[in-house]
Amino acid sequence: MIPLAALEKDVIQLCREVGAFIRKEAAEFDRSKIEFKEGFNNLVSYVDKEAEFRLVEALKKFVPASGFVTEEGTADATKDQEYIWIIDPLDGTTNFMHGLPVFAISIALAYKNKVVLGVVYDVSNNDCYHAIENGQAFCNDEPIRVSSVSQLQESLLATGFPYYHLDKRDVYLDIIKLFLEETHGIRRLGSAAMDLAYVACGRMDGFFEYNLNAWDVAAGAFIVQQAGGKVTDFSGGDNFLHGGELIAAGAVHAQMQEVIQSRWFK
Image (cartoon, rainbow, N blue to C red; front, side):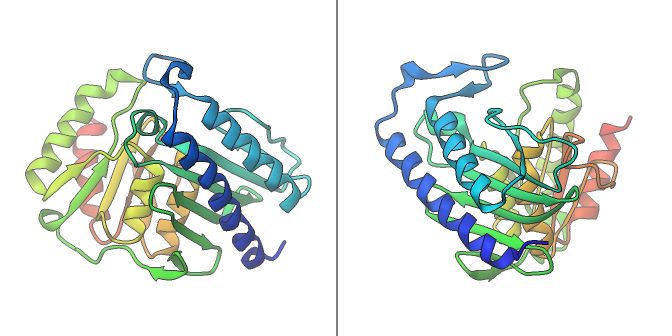
């Protein structure tokens, strides 16, 4: 296995470089160049595509013969590749396009289908959340831990609203209503990567969402785990990376899961 500590530093530096490009483009973004992918809420721009291209080209050099799972499809993974990069070059594209400064670069590295490195770079604030296998989680090289809040009634949660599978929308809204009654509130940041980074450092006590993709959550979920948190799918299993649903939290995870399951599996 390749040395992860040295690789982590290279990935962090890469994120800072590509993040500088994204910040520059944000200052002069031309909204006439917005594209629509699979629906009118699913947006993409030349910034997403160029950022992904720069990331992929550099990461290929860091780990030769590695594969890629990327949001914009710049490169592909095959079954015979031990190392797979899972990348979202700009998580929070809609925020970016509207000038809302909540968006991130998300990069995870999987070895034999297990995530071993995660980096979430908060572009606007120049904050980097990162972790490697068998290590701590950090923000800008300072150790971070998930929240120790143990009561749902004292928690602040994050969620997101899906663009697809709207047949589950009413059930999901019922779950949100329950949480609104049982917590200090719910925030919707518009970037799953940032939601997970905030859970990892204790700013949020928990995060839940469905209809997610691997590139949305791979890095952030791993960082939460390395920060002492628990990450599962809605049933409590470990199919959160490709299963499309996720609960990530510190001490309130079990209580969150109980609320979600009371409605989701009816």
